[in-house]
Every structure is written in structure tokens, then in C-alpha cells.
Image (tube, rainbow, N blue to C red; front, side, top):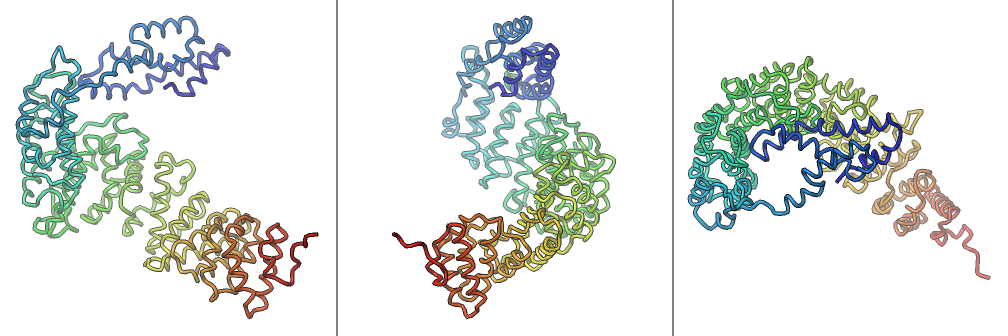
Length: 626
């Protein structure tokens, strides 16, 4: 599908020569902008690097697709070039014909599941593409293997060593299937799978595959190695439910051998690890250095669950005592450039774990993890900690103070370099969590209140409200936050910035928060000139406090009906609840409450809602029919 923006460009192409040149230059730039992604896709898809002819076809087809719907508006030479491309490669719909026959596997998933895994391995080892059956591809065969492993992981993992002699493509898909099965909590035969992992490690050290290359095969062992590393990390991340601890020494040897690449792993390309990746942690996991570094951290976690291992015996001192794992992490921190940025994104995501396993070690290396001289690396680590780590680290608030302050200064405005919308919401959560834990410095709290947009202050109040429940151990601190914000709102000359923030109290009535406390706060809010953002269901909840709080509820309703920010239909939508409130108010011993009832009925009647006139004999009713 051609983007609408490109179609609009075509509509404007009949304008001035200067504008035509700008439009055509933009179209010509599309292919160049995405050339790196094309090369990565092509190599993965075709099992070889793109040649000159492949790149030419990509460039010409990109232009053809962009202008096809309005090609008649093109200058003559441009139109001729597009038609030449269409004649050589087909029109933009040619791909439908090209792929109308999906690649087929020469051995079905069903057959793999019905026969012994060794028979499947034997078939995969001997299979070669056929000249007459060109629709049978290695990629399709590998895909069937992956799905078979997912469906019967116990069967295939138990026979994993039978697949050790296969080409990299098949082993990669075998591990891809194991990754999914492991994530689903399937029972895995760990011993044979570790043996297969050891084989991949040995083969990857050689660089190239000894098998004869076929179309669609992996060019070397690097992709299979990454798949194996990801499976091993996923298994270790299961902790005690993952790999059995009887394999501790074997796993440790494998992990240390694999992570030896951390000091020398190549810089990922911009396509692999974009400079402004929305989620730097997930982008970093796909890089060689990121995948191997996370493996080390997963091993640290897994080992801590084994009370007989050196790490499990004293987990809080793990990094102090384990020189080999410590060396892996320090090698990662020594990296610069794209590799250093990817490594820092992984470490930032696991900041809580690093603090747990080696607080002293981490404190000393905070400047290396968040280097001021490398803003891209600093932000990658920070965003990963915000977006994908478990929670803020109270004990490190002082060490991370500058990072919080830097982010607060731009949050909600020019903050794309800090992760944009996703990270700014997590920044709010982290800051309020620190406040609730009584660990947020006052100067940082004031920076937050004074600098961020009102929308983020409303996010903060929403977060606070979730901690006001009677069963929440942080409710008193949450009440303190509310009281301070309400006091500021009450004393403010310009109340508009506070309206949506303190107005959230309306929805709190349905959150299981102490209703008497809420009623008191509602009265303070109303007398300060504010109103709830959402009055739907509010009267229903107030009516539940009758008759014990009749006087207070009538007074609250008296102010609510006159507030310009509340729509009149809200009172009609909760007619029965309001009627109950007025009936109880009429029966009150307080003359002020009875007068309030009359004022409410009179005001609603003046606005066209006469449904309650029958409750006040002192007010004129609707005119009698003539």
C-alpha cells in the first residue's frame, strides 16, 4: 500500500518546478533511508549478502511502489524509468503472484511428531533442495521443526544430541522452539540440550559451517549461537524451576565460555540498535553483546536460587566473591560506542539485580554505567532502568539524583531522547514510589512539582490514589501527598492547573478507599472551588453513607449542583440516589441541612430538573393542568 502522504505528493506534482524537484528528491531518498534495513532483511531471508543487482532492484522497486498510483503525473523521463522497472520486475502487485504459492516443507510437522526424533534428524541431515520441487525450501522445513519442538518439547529435548550434526539453520530453529517451550513452563530434558549447546559453542568458534551451503541456510553459526544463548538465558531466568542445579558446573563453564565475547563483540549496526530505540533494552537483547551479557546476569540469578552454590550461600556478596562474573560485567562497562550503549541498556534493565548482588561494586561504578561523557549510553541505561526494571532503588536515590533531575527537566516536553511517553510515565511512578517510601529528597519533589506538565501531575495523583486503600501499608504517605497538593491548590491564585489533578477524587469513591476520609476531602475540595472530574456514580456512593453522614452529604451535594464544571445530566442519571439523599436531609434535625435540601431542589428546578419538587411542600409545584 502506498502511504497517503506519497499520494498527496503526487497530487501536488503539477505545481512549480522547484516543488517538483523537492518531491522527487524526497521519493529518491526513501530507498537510501532504509538501505541498511534492506541489507539485514535480505541476508537473513536469502542466506547471502545482497549484490549490486539486488540493491538496484530494491531501489527501483521502492521508487516504483511510491509513485505507481500517480505515475501519469511524472515527467516523461521519470515515467519511462518506472515503466521500465515494471516491465523488468512487474508492477507493485507482482509480489502477490510471486508469493501466491507459499513455500512448502518436504517433511511435515505431523510426520515429525509421529516418527522418532532421530528419524527427523536423519532426514534433515540428508535433505537437499530439489530442482523439480523448487517450492520445497529449507526455511519451510526449519519452520516445521521449530513448531514440532514447541508441541512436543519433552520428546525433542530428550533427543537433542541427535540434531548436533545438522546445519546452523535447523539448529537455530530447534532452539527457537525450545525458547517458546521453556517460556511456557514445559518439561525439558536439560542434559541433552546442554550437550547440543556445547556443540553450537564449539562450532561457532570455527566461524563457518562445514555443511554444504544451500539456499536459505544461515551463512555461519552466529544466528544459531544467539538462539542458543537466548534459550539458555530463558532457562536460567526460571530460577529453581529452570535448569536443574545438578548441572551447575556444566552451566557455569558454558556461560563463562559464551560471555568471553563481551570484550570484543562487534558494534551493532544502527539497524540492529537504533540510536533512538523506543525500548533500548529490547533492542539491546537482539545484539550479540546484549544477548551474552544478559546471559551472565541470568546465570547470576539462577545460581542465587541454589543454596549450595557459592553464589546461593551469600547472594548479597556475589559480585565481591565471583571474580569471573565480575570481569564479564566490567568488560561490558569498558565498552564504548554502539556496543557500550547496548551493554548499558542491559545493565540498566538489571539495576535492581546488580544492587542486590553487589551494592558496593555497583555504587563505585555508577559513573561508568551512566557516563556523562557519553549521553547516548547514559540515556540508554537510564531508560532501560525506568521502562523495564522492576522498581526504583531507594538506596540509590542519592547516586541517581542527577539522572532523575535531568529527566524531570524535560519530561512531557522535549523528552524523546529520554524515551518519550513510555519512560515519562514510568518516571512519575518511580518518583511517587520513592515519595511513598519516604525516600524522595524534598528538592527533587519540588523540581517535579514545578517543572513537569500538569498531565504528569495528574498521572502522579492517579498513582497515589492506588495506594489509598485501607489494606495498603503506604496509605498514610499517600494521604500526605494528597494533603500537600490540595493545600497548594487551595492557596493558588491560578487554580486552573490543579483542576484535573485534584479532581481525580471523584473516581476514588469507587476504589475501596475509606469513605469517611474521602467525604472529608471532598468537602475541602468543594469549598476550595474545585469539583470532581467525574461525577458519574458519585451520588450513588455518597448515598451509601446515609443516614450516618446525612448532614455532610447534603452540604456536599448543595455545592456540587451549583458547580459550573459538573454537567446537570449527572444529577438526573443518579436520580434515585439523589432522592434518597434529599429524603434523609429533610428528616435531619439540622435546620441548615433542611435548608440545604430546599436549595438543592430549587436550584435543580430552575435548571429544568423538576423531579424532586414533590419533596418540598414549601416550593411551588408544576402548574396544574387547565
